[in-house]
Amino acid sequence: MRIYVKIHPKSSQSKVLKTAENEYEVWVTAPPIQGEANTALQKLLADYFGVSRSCVSIVGGKTAKTKIIDITQ
Image (tube, rainbow, N blue to C red):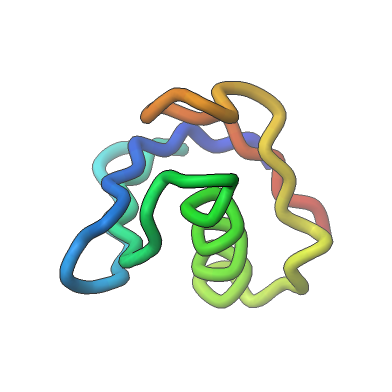
C-alpha cells in the first residue's frame, strides 16, 4: 500500500490522523535532524498499521514535509 504523509516534527505529542483515502498527517516529537523524525515516523506508522518497522519504507520526500510511504505486509 502506498500512502502520502504530511509530517509535523518536533511536536508536543506523537499521533496519526487520517485526512483522506491514503493521506495522513503525522505528528512526531523527534526533531528533523539526522533523520530522527523519519525514524520516529516509521516506528509510529508501523504501530498504527500493525506491521514491523522494516515493512514501512520512505520512497519519496526524505527531506520534505510531505512524504511517500510504502507499507508492505
